[in-house]
Amino acid sequence: MENIQQLLSPFPRADLLAQPTPLDRMNRLSERLGIDLWLKRDDLTGLSMGGNKTRQLAYYFGAAQAQNADTILITGAVQSNYVRTAGTIAAMLGMKADLQLEQRVAGMGAQYYASGNVLLGKLAGAVHNSYPDGEDEAGADAALHARAEYLRRQGARPYIIHLGQGHPPLGALGYIRGGAELAGQMDDFDVAVVPSGSGATHGGFLTGLRLSGVMAPVHGICVRRDGVQQLARMDRLTLDIAGLIGTERPFGVDQINVWDGALVPGYGQVGDKTRSAIELMLRTEGVLLDPVYTGKTFAGLLDLLANGTIKPGQKVVMLHTGGQAAVFAYQDELA
Image (cartoon, rainbow, N blue to C red; front, side, top):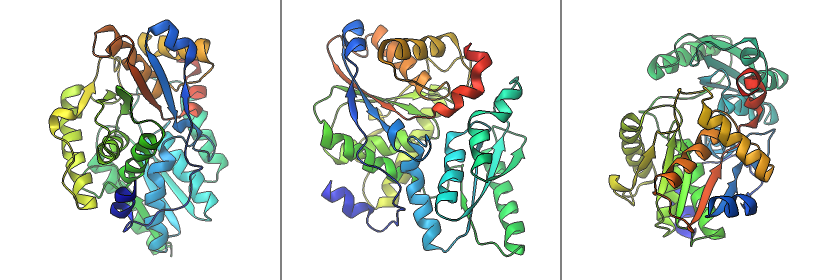
């Protein structure tokens, strides 16, 4: 961890976390599945169900504070836990939040647009704006820049948290720390399973583990893109992460594992595998997963066990990234 702290020391970080988060054994599921299953409980980072996004946002808010910003601009899906958590943190730090919500998930009912993370964002006092295209990262970022320019003319000091690649992946630094934290709690596990969406959590976590000397395979479960697209994204992103901290990437592309077998029917949509995985975890261990990230992640873990990638008896750590607020926006899909 000392070497990692040195690598991360140039980057300002807001003090947001109640660290370390617990590492809990799932006793009944371990017996049922025939593996030694543990959850790294990053759903318990605090800050109103902020989950794993709190780790990522600590570095963005650190940079914003260093620049004396007073307003945060961020973009993501309507039910983005990331976007809403940014609004919560901004309120806590006495800043304003301008949240851009992208239309990524078609065919959703009124609850999706009013409950869950949307409701929490409004309660925190955030401003909400809409962006019509959910698959246009460059366009969404450009809209943030246009909004920031408008706010500057009003006297604000905005800071933009970008969505697309080509910008310093500061959020991944939080998961370099997260991977090192897990290594300090347990370094003898056989397999780790994490969600893989923007890639910041997956890429940072893998980097942190490798820099800590942990060589267990890390399987990223695709929650937004298919495996081919996600592998290309992760290859570029992890090189960018290494470049940001001024080191060589501590692994080859052959160690970037992605699995898209639980992605169907698509990002933010609840398929049979995801619904069954959420029910299995809740009914067996009393732990709530969300329908966008962790439900698909546990469904992917079950796939990897079924196809022999995860072997009977292995010690498996799944990263629980939180996001449970979205459950209430998916009542119709889950009921």
